Amino acid sequence: MTVHQPRPPVPVDPVKLDRLAEVAVKVGLALRPGQDVFLTAPVSALPLVRRIAVQAYKAGAGLLTPILSDEQVTLARFQNAEEASFERAPSWLYDGVAKAFSANTARLAIVGDNPMLLSGEDPAKVARANKANSIAYQPALEKIAAFDINWTIVAYPSPAWAKLVFPDDAEDVAVAKLAEAIFAASRVNAVDPVAAWDAHNAALRARTAWLNDHRFHALHFTGPGTDLTVGLADGHEWQGGASEAKNGIVCNANIPTEEVFTTPHALRVEGRVSSTKPLSYQGTLIDEISVRFEGGRIVEAQAAKGEAVLNKVLDTDEGSRRLGEVALVPHSSPISASGLLFYNTLFDENAACHIALGQCYSKCFVDGANLTPDQIAAQGGNKSLIHIDWMIGSGEVDIDGVHADGRRVPVFRRGEWA
Image (cartoon, helix red, strand yellow):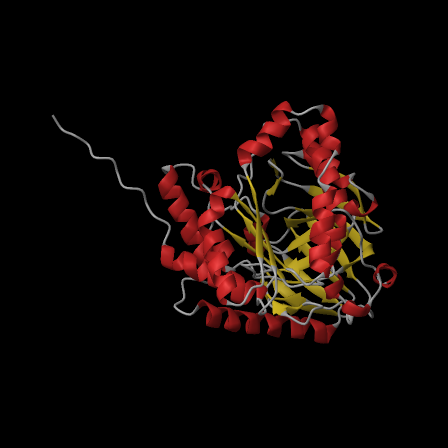
């Protein structure tokens, strides 16, 4: 009789996982001695959480406080809670988080939950819970959006997420493949990933310097289903890669990142635009989005999949139908070249040019650290409870920079820097 031995699991490379933890602390946060850290993560990411704790304390962290989420606990609420539960959120917790940020606590988020976790739940409950959470989180979000403190986001490959990206592989193989994709995108395959990030940040700075020298009045996107003019906010400033927070620390808010981005003018967006990649939002895949802007506001919206969820998002508040960000990413970026759909905005937004509905970033203004919310609004900055990125770039999209006098300068041709 032939006995088949069980196949040993395919491991996540521990050396690269240590490097990712090092990048999160030294590049993402650029943590300072004595600084506290507030960390959130799914329980599946505990191997990375533990390594980050080691790196953080080696870097002199004062106190690292983790809060872990669990998919089954989340599902228990949607499947069993009373209706009133979905109008509530832990405001006491978010008030404490905002207080921590006011005391210069750094923010580190690890993403990795199943993107489709809530796909089988009542969309109305999901929408109500998201809105309640957004309202409660606003005091803390304002400090993130204003870049008051150094913060970063990194990723860890949970089994459910990995199976979504690699559905034809066994779970352990899928996890190992997604881990390698995360490592490659996060530049931890290099022997010295910190040096690799220094070089990448320098390249992104060169792009932002060119764009800031031009001070375009607007960007004009053209491509299949797209003829969109995005007016840029008065006194806008392009950012990309490492940026200086108001506390003086230069950090990388997203690991990975391939984008340079700035603030659109909330009242000066006109035309039609179509998505080029699906948007995974709170358990719903929203695909083939097409919207039309008038006076900066979305006045028509369709989607081949997830249209009902899209419309609920657009009705969140007054600012949710206006733009808070426009970002440029070449079609040849490493994440695009991988050919993978990650079902995760942290990665998918770095595969294509994109726009974001909702809240703007104050750091994307000249002297933004010293501008009041009223001044930011007067210069065209948008305010909202949400900030949701979706992709509009591809190898078929051209972008022109438009000066106030109408002069046009090629910025992208067929998805690449011109």
